[in-house]
Length: 352
Length: 71
Image (cartoon, rainbow over all chains, first blue to last red; front, top):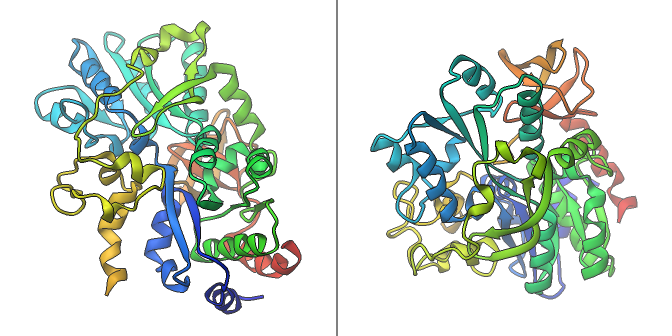
């Protein structure tokens, strides 16, 4: 088997119309950058999933982060992706322009040095992310405890991908197969999808981030669909183990506990969040105090439907008109891995 | 946001190590991987999340070979 054969076989697909969801935003980027859709027959539709942590973070979280950044002797540290995400009032970027103390971090580890050097400042870490990122916060907390550093707090919006996929499997019956995320699966393991595959009779393929990986995974899913299988295939074995990264899972569970969490545009999904365990609450910056029901940001914003694959970005009336990467109205336009931002940057190329 | 890049471990010192990304040397937390000097690790936000078992090109060649028996 080679790439040409696979592309031909995918193009020759004669079955009924179907939708495949790529869960991870980095996969969406690979799909666009490599023009993967141009190899697919019109009957196969790729739908982008909820795998962008920035996009699913509720607006009240941004407001809470801003509130901290305005407190005396407090500095908020955040990944750059979060800066332009609209809160109910404003974004972190706008708050910073008005004098709020917000700094961009490359890694949460950076706080160790800062916190030691400036004991009078409390550092709040805007802790967003899926399973890929959660071990890093856990490792950091361990070092804070070991070194008796107490001027660091976590404002968490940590999300678990399996409960979110369970929600999508249960509500979006048109999606028949899943390209499972590569890096979250590094932590979780490919076996983590077995239960969903069996429960909903849907095949999963864990894929890497090269164009070949994606095409191989699409071919694999099509063959599974055609032969009535619903298995989990690990097509990224250079980094993903069936059982995942056990040390990472262990340290996550040492410090964090699953509970219900609010997803922007979706609402509460049971057990879909991770929160600091009660013993470590002095390191928490009020992550559980966010309102369960989030106010609608902008009545025309349809990010919620984009996140769960109900619509594609072009079906949103604001897309590319009043909502652009320079002046985003919704989170999916902000992040480099948000579906709308990716479509805006790449989709013109595909229309021709 | 879950972007992760492969780099080569060139030094280790307890929890931390130095990882070479094509000449750019970065301090990386090695707390959840079992990495030795010379290993390639996948790094996300300053933390190695896994040791690479083989290179990407070899993986893709192997996948093509395995594809027929897999499905």
